[in-house]
Image (cartoon, rainbow, N blue to C red; front, side, top):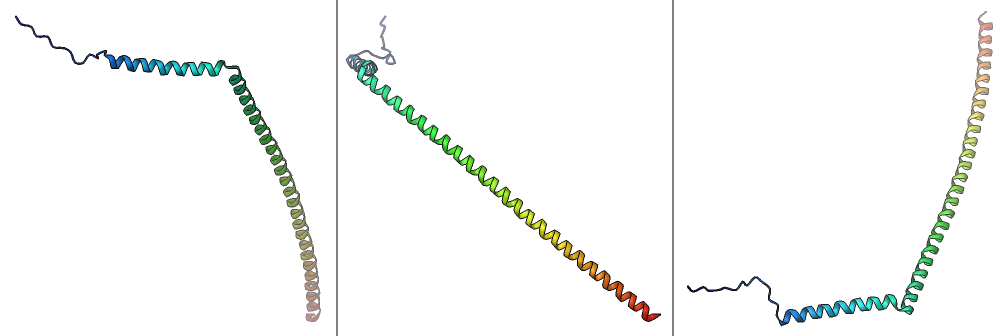
Length: 130
């Protein structure tokens, strides 16, 4: 019996090119890890990073404080404007009420005068007819 063996072509082969790519991957990965460790553990760079973080934190706190102050100022100005509008509204209401009362008094006086004139006319007419 002759048995013929066929190689399975689906299995990956480990050849020289695979070894080189794995070596390069390890080399690049090691370089990245070494660079990151060097940056983290180097005293000057670490101090510079801390200083930069401190400046950013201080700048953010300054911006926050400035925004809070502007908000307080705007709130005060709006409150003052509302108070001013309320006072002006009360003044306008008072003036309108005064005008209505004065107009009512004038109408009352005219009505009283008209009533007196009617009474006098009726009295004169009654005297003439009698």
